[in-house]
Image (cartoon, rainbow, N blue to C red; front, side):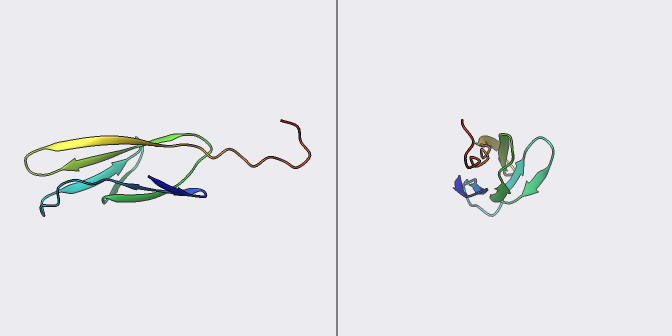
Length: 77
């Protein structure tokens, strides 16, 4: 997972044999493809990569951590 500022790119890799398909899911939505770019939220989000081919499948999870808000100037912690 690569994160720059508030965007993260998740990458899922498997054997590229022409039959492999990739799907990302977060429990609500699904997206096709081996890469997914998401925006960080105000809470942690778990994304699951599902890899499948005609013979088998596998999955792997990754958590995109929330971004704490920037400190307010002059405010005590």
